[in-house]
Length: 302
Image (tube, rainbow, N blue to C red):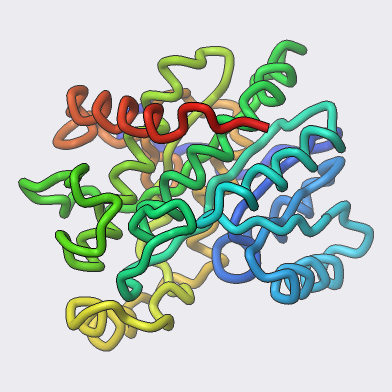
């Protein structure tokens, strides 16, 4: 689809399908769960790190969509143990997984490390999601064998356009030193995008895309800032964001349901395939992201 093509925005039914979304306690994730619940799926797994917030989000969806088949699943993407527990529950509880939306994320937060020693934003936004995807790949492939390809949707952003000459500083991804918190976020979103596109090449049985929701007013802008650059974004940029989550989630819904979605593409809102320029056309960096991630996840299984 060209950048000038206007896609059909009417969502298709999800009857009989199983969906898993990460980061559904608030913002785009919760809104995505709400909108998909209206499409009559067989089940939606709503994941969150906090059981209290996660269950509150499930209750929120069920109040607005009575009878919705939504279920809470505890998932902390900064912990391999938590990711493995969640994946094990899904694999044991379901014979199919039709749509996997890798939505959760952190932005510009104070420096810290995950349980396995990764910089918190790269570890949560990219590495954690990559592990979850790898653990659920057999289920996705099994679902696709029925003739209807399962979908994987990786939430990136327009941040990759600001990656700069450093692109991704692989030698600092297990360190608190190096890039600034906002730069760390940009690197993680670049990794989200490029890993998804590489994953698509290696798994042609699936439909795998990355998406940009646009400039959306979410809670990412209300959390503790990691540096002055993030403070600036919170005080000067966030107040000007006029796109609410109800609008920002449209690219999620389109990618999850539209019949014209092409695997291996990065979609800007709504349903506009980005031209392969800049980092989108950087096959060397994409392969570096893939190889680094595969090395880090080697031996991790359930």
